[in-house]
Image 1 (cartoon, rainbow, N blue to C red):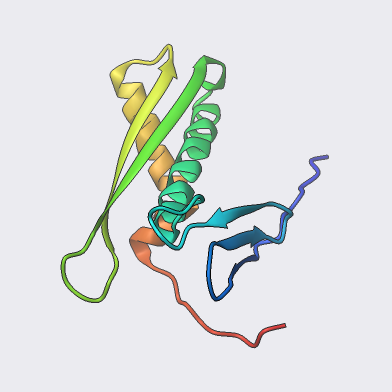
Image 2 (cartoon, helix red, strand yellow; image 1 turned 45 degrees about the vertical axis):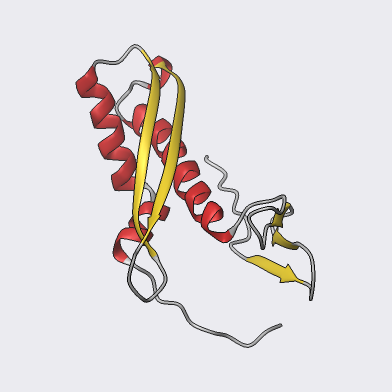
Amino acid sequence: MVKITTRSATVGAWLGGTGRGRITAHSGTSVDLAGLATDEGLTPLEFMDAALAGCLVLSVRIAARKFGWGNRLTEVAVDVTHTKAADEPSRVERFACSFAIEGDFTSEERQQLIDEAHAICTVGNTFERGAQIIDVEAK
């Protein structure tokens, strides 16, 4: 029998009147929030890029296992660069994803892994199709 373990899906952000903030996942980890380009930590846009890059590397591994190629995958890296829209409202217009997939794969197989990763990546699917944002009462 397979045991499924879940994590909290809640993440919070805190920012004082001055200085850096903090992003804290209720699953137990936290990281500095950079409010300025000179601050340590990640900016909100870097968190979006990181979420997409992280989801895609995990999705490539899932795809490799799905295709029976898991033992051939030695490493995968994804760099994500965003481009902001020139018009209002303020938003990201495009994410460019650069994949480096190491292992014994043909060019066609690498492309299959990339295509499947995009198909199963929850973060990428959310960015492409959008999500409803609602406000709820604070606890």
